[in-house]
Length: 148
Image 1 (cartoon, rainbow, N blue to C red):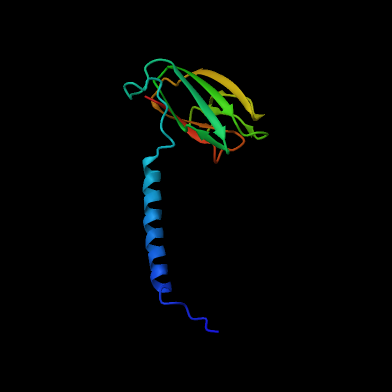
Image 2: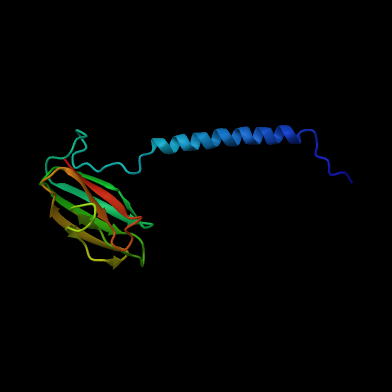
């Protein structure tokens, strides 16, 4: 018995590699078009930073926040509904006034999902980026409150 490959084997491998390369490039390009971290706007009509109160739902799922960016005007009232969808997993959402997380703005209790909490606070009066995290998963569950 001969273990020689037929004459169409080499062209088949070449065709497979070409199709695989094109498919991989197309999938990668498609992922660049999808913005999973799209900032939440209170007034989506003008696309700008909201001038009034901000109402947003932040979902905790697979130990990630969605969305990861919330926009607000300086001094605006911010209402965040935190929806922990990870069954049996402890999460919270904690807003901080600085990057080193030494000053808290507002926080929910740490509790297992599924659970919801509503947090109401006033956005800082100074423009800037204010981090929010899950205190249990501070390396993966992160986001920014962008104040303008």
